Image 1: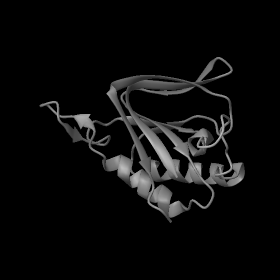
Image 2: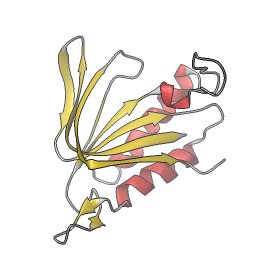
Image 3: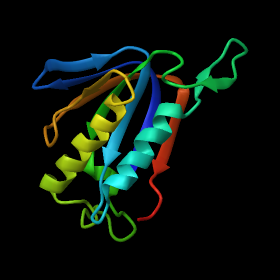
Image 4: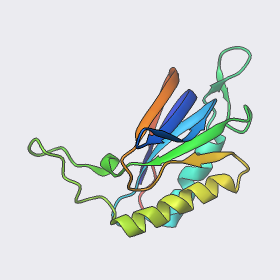
Length: 148
């Protein structure tokens, strides 16, 4: 299981040219689940991003968490994070979790963030989405859950 976390000034998801959800200051998180991933990994990732200190304090140092700045999170499922591009020129998605299980663990991940009283918006699992964001920094982290 891996996520891409981008610190944003704002981010939004549109579907069929209609705004579906948006946030102001916070994180845009792209979420990918692989075969064999388990809820404990989602727990670990949710806890990590809720306490990760990557927002600037009054001295410009990354010392503040999403909770400290009262930010929001937009979580978008993205199975392409699980692609294998080592061989050939076409990505292989053999490592991606099947859609039903991936949706369940995606929703579980979102629920674990909400439990920490952080406002969370989402995209639509499996939909073709257009994502807009204003990356702040730019600050981007790729975080992979520890092995099962």
